[in-house]
Image (tube, rainbow, N blue to C red; front, side, top):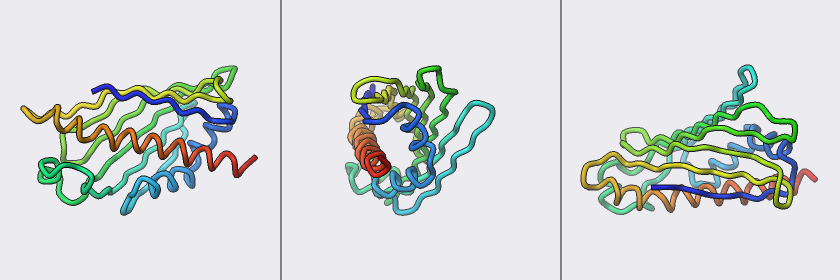
Length: 165
């Protein structure tokens, strides 16, 4: 199932990237998405920046058939691997979201480019549940949670950036 989202920020690509790579911002994002507990790491190697967050999320927003497969909580690991910035501050990266113990994965691309009110973040991904006969239903159940997490990230990001102007 295709996942696509655009987040507009009123800041430069550099300012948005500094925000995304801030551990405190990532902590706020995890808490705002309902994490019962979480860990965050930000590492830079050569010209790449890797953001990893692992969240324990309640599974109560999912249909019963999904909950019966994963239990009361989901351990979700999100990895963003960002490349170097271009002359205009634009950056591109990859996104991977994995759920421990479940054959559900999101693989996609990320882009921060000048545009809109300052910066446009584009998220494109493919959500796959490799479960015979139920894969499509699991994808349909998971997609709203993914879209909600993206929306929350945008809202937290706008608040974060506004507080620093």
